[in-house]
Every structure is written in structure tokens, then in C-alpha cells.
Length: 184
Image 1 (cartoon, helix red, strand yellow):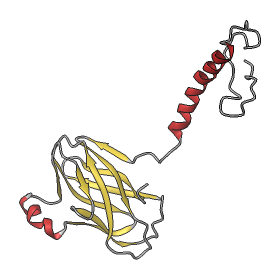
Image 2 (tube, rainbow, N blue to C red):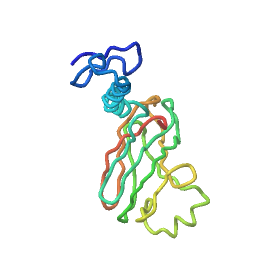
Image 3 (cartoon, rainbow, N blue to C red):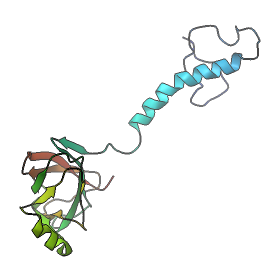
Image 4 (cartoon, rainbow, N blue to C red):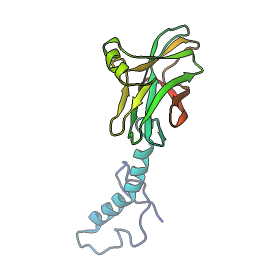
């Protein structure tokens, strides 16, 4: 295979040429250059697609389980000693009922499940400990809904770092995940 000779210095300039006569060897029918460009484009598409697949934002952090998927547990940056640091996450594709009972991590003394005061009457009607997972409904845990907080962070949490996180469910048991610092 020979490199395509071209004055173009862009992406297509140094692509290998398909087998067959070069555009100089073709009869002058007026379509030689456009055929060459089409070949270059066809050869470039797989390389371009491969480049796009490996660049861009970081991959989503999802943890599929039997009956649901945990999506992107995260918190903000914090200094050691910080108290009550919000942990946010989503649980989606819920197909079987379950309850999120507790969570733990090595970067805080405790993780506490909090329910905003305006939701307490609703939470009492939802019998049982923890937070219920209902089939067909996503669970979003943030400052406006039941959520976990890190109590007494014991290390500096820096943007982009991941730390071990364990979520405990009534039906599926422990789920290992990563607590990401920053929303990505």
C-alpha cells in the first residue's frame, strides 16, 4: 500500500490507499479525484469512529444488579474533618422491589441516611427501614430527597478521585461501587 499523495495536510493526507491504480494511472474521465477522495473518506471513517469512542467525557459509573442499576454515586471535594457531606446517586431500571438500607465507605467515620423534614410524613407511611425501590420508578438521592451524608470525612477528597463505597440492600445484599469526587 502506498501513502496517498496529496497537498492536503489534514486527516486524510496520510491515509493508506486502497489497492488498485492510483489517480495518475486512471484515464482522464473527470471522476478520478472524487473517487480517490471517496476512498480516503471510507478509510477514515473507522479511524474517526475509533477516536471518538475513546475520547470525550469519562465513562458513566453504573453498577447493574438483579432488579436495578446504581448510577454514579458522587460527592463534592472536601477537606478531612468535613461533616455532613452530601452523597448523590440514582437507581434506575428498577424491576424488582427492594430497599436501600445503609452505606459505608473508608473515607468517613459513618454514612448517615437523611430524609428532609418535609418528607418525614411520607417516609413514615413507607413502612420499613431505609429507602424503598419501586418497580418502574427511578430513585434519585439528592438534597431534596432521602440521601446519604458522609459524617466526619477522614481524608481529603480531591476532584476526579474514586473511593470504595458499599451500598446495602434488603434483597440483593451488599453492592460494591465507587464514590466519585465531582460530578464528571
